[in-house]
Image (cartoon, rainbow, N blue to C red; front, side, top):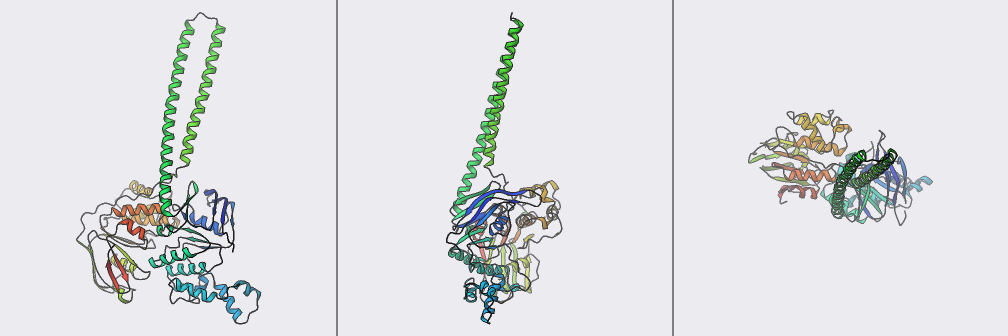
Length: 538
């Protein structure tokens, strides 16, 4: 481990299997400052993170690192038979420690352990600090939830000797308490840190934001708020400059046409005068040659001037990120909903124990409730009971309005179908041109429309699932959303927030992202606490 950690890109490019370049000639140095990496879905953030961590080799260029890098992917997979220690990346070291304690003198065991003689105690302390009470190093990792797996992997990363941590969407599967713990741990991390994220609260703790776009990498000093303000202003200035250059080109083209017309009129007058002049043919020929040479020279100057105007427009356009904005069209108004949209009376939830197993709930017309509480408290189960996907163990469930449900796993009714077929299934009476327009506005162009779900990225699949929920027929008057922002980039999330703010129906959404909840304008919370379900103000 060095005192000045760094990761450096030198003209790094990455090529897709079809031969296209995902990005090219990237130059950047990541130092000890806490850095957030942002960008649209599909631009290559996860690929870049893996390149920096040494998990991929660039097609061109090179990545330099001051020392070892600990990398955590978005999805923490568990190998068959893996323990919690294995998931934390410390299984081999702890196994070596155990063999040494039993009398091993194998050099390989001492090399695997290094100077970490208190590693067992340090891991257990870190697990407790991550509020993984009751989780031990020897426990099978398959028993852990997605959020718990992420916490274990983070605990192992924090105990590593890495110069740099590279974390890809580390807060996606964490509840509010887990996100707060993550933020506290990252503030204490003493070495290099790069976080790929769309979590605006987490990005607010960063000291630098680096944006990856079609234009390459752009570094912004400061946290997310500074980046958002500065990048918005830069985009506005770039668009204004492009508009000005196009205006100048139009004016230049007009001036060049007028000059050409004047030359043609002068040439016509000269020809008429020459026809009536009493001059020798040789003199008339020389005058014609001079006129042709002058016209040729003027034409060349015009071509050069047009080329300069075109180049100015190209240079201005190169500073504008051409990625189209994500647009969610307002859903069709389904008319007035009943005053009592949904009623749960003495309901006993399946798969939930303790006080949270029982719930009474009245959802009124136009309410916008956030479902909050720790992972595993029953929020997803409650949404599935309301959606009719799970039967209650007891009590009365009454939903009085058309509804749409979107789960965490982005389940869709036709798993093998294409994106276009999925949207047609949700709205069978909608014409194909309109369906394709809706997909295109989400950033799913003609190439994506014909692709099956398996070929879509997480963000693309989330956009499709959202479209199916929002454009369902008959139009929904109750939306049941389970962590809808997990796979969206910042632009798509802001588009979703804007659309949900205009949503005229009733909304029940499970989310841990406080910035997202604030952005959609919730009117209250239904919180899963230790004593059961309770209503709270927004």
